[in-house]
Amino acid sequence: MDPDFLLFALGLAAFCAGFVDAVVGGGGLIQIPALFAAFPNASPATLFGTNKLASIVGTSSAAVQYARRVSIPWRVAVPGALAALLGSWYGAKAVAYLPPTVLRPLILVLLVLVAIYTFMRKDLGTVSTEPAHGGRSAAIALGIGGVIGFYDGFFGPGTGSFLIFLFIRLLGMDFLRASVTAKILNVATNLAAIAYFVNNVSLLWKVATVMAVCNLSGAVTGSRAALKHGSGFVRRMFLCVVSVLIAKLAYDTFR
Image (cartoon, rainbow, N blue to C red; front, side, top):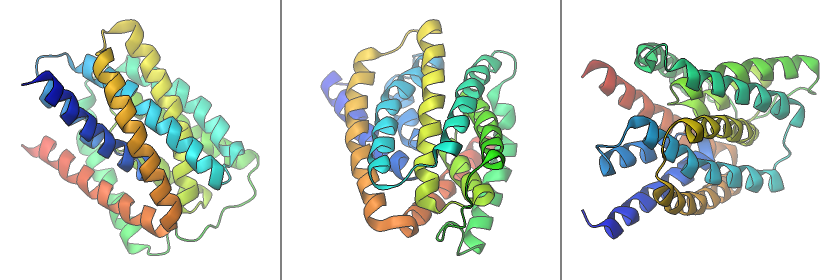
């Protein structure tokens, strides 16, 4: 395949991934398959690391875009991000001891339950019931960050969706506030994963640079769309991404 066309196709995929990821997470559903299709002979670790390099720019940009318009609950975001950073590092290391695919059936079941619950609770995340955050909220955020951070470093699919759902269900946020808080934690998990990959595998730096620029453009577009259309738009996107995740994991599990 022509190298220029290959970079163009990967850039287009990265733009779409950045858009989706900025709204509800799940950009890896687009970006990772594109990388595997473009470089079928590369090691999975190289492609996962390249994906993280391309993603973190867009995720960070989305977090900044949201922070300008939506107040970030820092008492939740900071402890959650620190726990996610640590959890993601150990999750990446745990891959050496246990194949991530053993989690696939469990994650499939959890995503189905999340989708059913969100669909049946029409008001979930549309109106904020968020309390004043104190020690209890910080403790919940530590738990969410540690567990989901470990999961992201270990396996990954659905990380943003799980974060958003848990922030809504356990801390009463609306979809918009949950999404911006999830972005802060996603930046932390990406940083930890990149630190691990940079020191342990070779990465496709040229490809990552092109995809990062395109992912950034998609993230800016996606975050602006979310801020313009509000929690209802984010909720619909959330259900769409979760549905695609379920279909993808079901295919991988039962094929």
